[in-house]
Length: 302
Image (cartoon, rainbow, N blue to C red):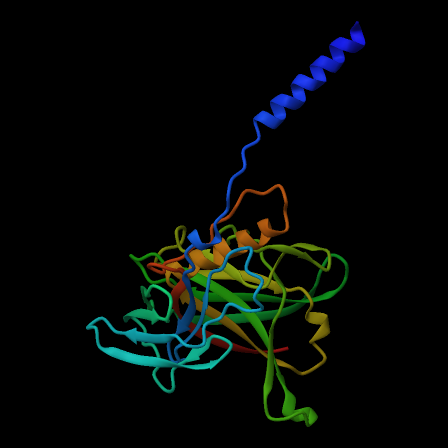
């Protein structure tokens, strides 16, 4: 009798499961593909952008860049500044025009088969590096490191957003490898309470390592500010007689929000238990970012 009851229970359970199943038809044609614009620009550099389009997860094509788009930039008076030329693989660049600090620009992108998209952004004022001090030292493991103290004056009365990185510069010509130079970021460690930690990672036993630093001036508006950090893997470069740069970029808020949200997205991408992350976008009618900044550089010798 007990076996019969169990059989009846399992049969009813199966019927309930089957009856609760609903088949949903997926129509890929209902998903509208949009133009994706990625243009991060600084003053005194050529205009550039990468143009592609969104696509369905069912799309198995090898690439999604657009090589037939019209990419135009206008100034505040609606005067055409430049129309970028397609270079390759969806990368576009101006022939000679460059952005100017404290100016607001608008980008418009048209491509056959897609709705037009646009975005506006301004380049903030340049913030000079006042001074940099470097001192060779050792970490707790006895490995040589380079301590860096960078000083700059934050413009008062406005919100400022900063991105700081340290690069090495390798002159290929000294080895007979051509006239070009190779650049790369150096891993740095920083414990400043004002920096964002969304892009921190572990490197050579250091938990708070960064490829670049993000910070905003909420706690030091209008002040002369000193930021301290150290180069983790300085031992690899100190005997190579390499040159380098400390790069301070005063970015627009849109640039800052894009970088921050993208780092959160990258972290969540490899975590199956994380919540979906929306990368910041200021492109009207599309996806991506159009944002600017001003760059100030301080040379260093390793």
